[in-house]
Length: 198
Image 1 (cartoon, rainbow, N blue to C red):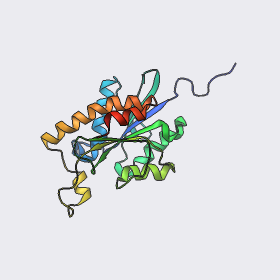
Image 2 (cartoon, rainbow, N blue to C red):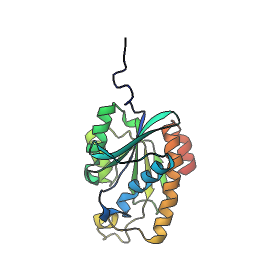
Image 3 (cartoon, one colour):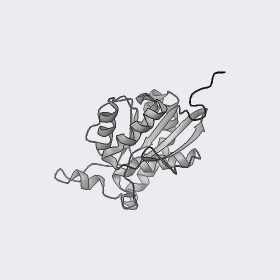
Image 4 (cartoon, rainbow, N blue to C red):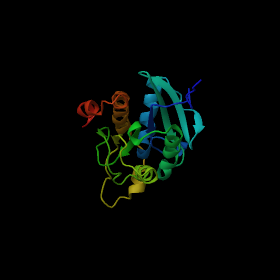
């Protein structure tokens, strides 16, 4: 008899929303990834409540694929610890891991999808690339708006809260991430880019 080594626990695709854990970081720009992944979890009826791989995770089956949703609990700058631990366990390639992250170079509520690439100024993505040794992660960048002036401290800006109007725009963008993530998971990233890049 032959048995699949990890029968029942395999994952076809992982979607990671980046952010910082804790109530004080709720509704901050750096937590746009958490906000989007929560929308995806609600839409797909997946509860992200289990603590494993230094992250809150939840899994379910979507379009016939076993999907793992993740919110790293390491704080942003160490996001790679959680991502790579789960990747190693499930033997996932970077191409099977979608990262949802905030982007200050995009106006609030705008979305940009990328197949791969550098981290830019984003420390969470930098850590994922450094620890995995690859930049081939597909990603959804959620616009959170640029610093109000060049001298404004970047760390203070990304940890600042959204205004009511900004949050409405962000929620609309997070809603779009549901369909975008499904297309990317189903190997239709070109279609996702055509539809949602703004």
